[in-house]
Image 1: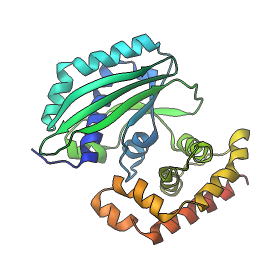
Image 2: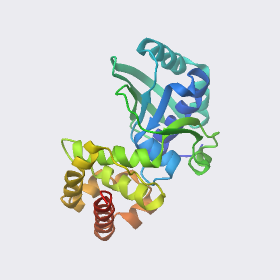
Image 3: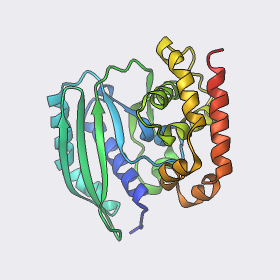
Length: 255
């Protein structure tokens, strides 16, 4: 049995969940977003702790039933077992009209303690563009899984979402800056035209990029990279380059 890192084990669980969700919930009813979208569809080097989705025209009770059935299905246990994973326990601490959240404790073969992750569906009325595609083959290849096919937000939409998150969070998260660098540098996406509220928030987003110290990046992002990527990207020089690039790219957007 392959011994996986904690981040690989959690990612494998997310991919298995998405693969099984295809058969249980109409694909038009959910959109993958956040870190899993950036890694599974846009090749980010950063692993995601959790799986975030937007629910689309799905009643909370219907979604709750679908997910609960998925979690008790023999197929889930079998697919996880083949990966050396075991779902120890799950809970659903939040089931409201706007947010439905499940939490999981996972055991990975040859590794202790247990790992934790969550899957969360939101209903906040996003009007951003998304597309139905299979995730990148290189992401699922290490696990021997078939690529999940799901709606996910486009690179342009993800850039706008990240700008909004960077400007709007109570505390700046360095992953937003890292993700913006990846999307702006590695894709041909152009987020323009920006809506008026995002244009208004742009100066705040740029200011926040310039105020984040290296130590915060080292604590919040570097641990979520593979060891070889940590050596390449986990330096002060790289972080300074990331910040400069994002500031320059964001500064050009009003033009």
